[in-house]
Image 1: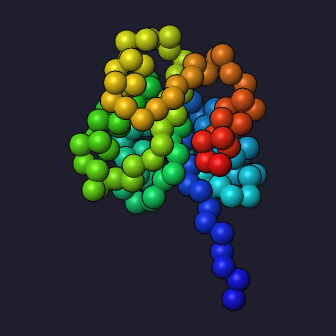
Image 2: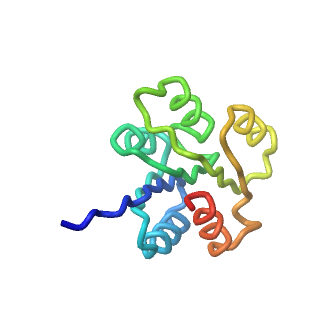
Image 3: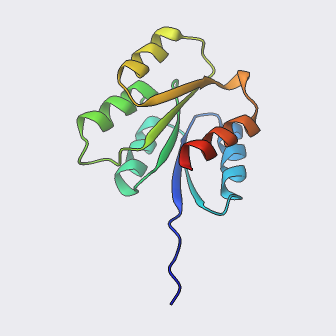
Length: 129
């Protein structure tokens, strides 16, 4: 019997359906990735509870529970949620929000409008290499 190669699991948590779909489609085409999508923080937490996610692309500004809330929740309840590497994606130049998230540890961030989809995909590849 052949051993199956471990598929890296990526969660895209973003309330912009077009970006979520585009990233998901591009990443799903990669042989080694399984991609999950969440349109808000509460949905992201449920996926983090159910799956061992390796990398989460996390929007800062989402309905129901924002990116800061998601990060605080998974850090406070480490045994309940997978603890992925996190890449913050934001449209906001709100450096206070980004600074708060960076203070919570573990991430890089980028402003969506400053990067192409290809650049984001390349960063994902580098993080999961």
